[in-house]
Image (cartoon, rainbow, N blue to C red):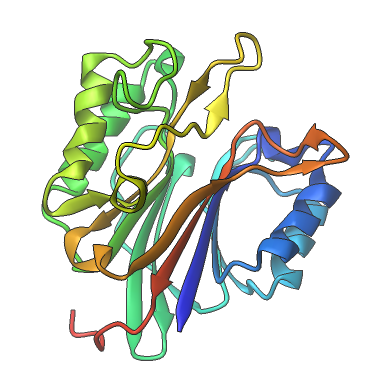
Length: 247
């Protein structure tokens, strides 16, 4: 059994692109979907459920225009402990239960520097993940961070962001894209102004889960030559022949 996971930043909730985004989701056929900059847009909500992703978890916010994260799954979801962060609508945590098997996911959309809370958010994640609560854990989403000189086409990431990202390339963590592709240069977002690229959408897995990775790549989506988002989606596939849950 292969478990297909898609993570995608929709950009402003997919405004004006909802129908195209819904079609794209149905074509990608994820078993688990993680969205950033998600809003309650009816066409996208229908696209999620029409794709068979009937188990949904997303933090609430008073404003419908507020960007949130969402986890949707074909398999049952159980809410998991979450890090205490500023802007809590930017993080969700769930255990995906596939029969006697399980995968723990933390989905994030880390604020950018201009928010004034980015480093507080990074510290909260570091504290929460200092000792992984599960042997099969996945941290993924738009992290607005990368390794300086590797994940930026032109110099942008500072030492703090670079060191934080690099820490997930060391045990007990593994950068899923780097495990599959080594030092290949790839970018998941391009500046609409300068056009330069950055790899800011990441998937970090615990070391014991890394051996079950069979695929990790970025997928760009466009309709009639017009991009459906300024971010590429991040696709992961896992060999879901996992050990029975004992945690």
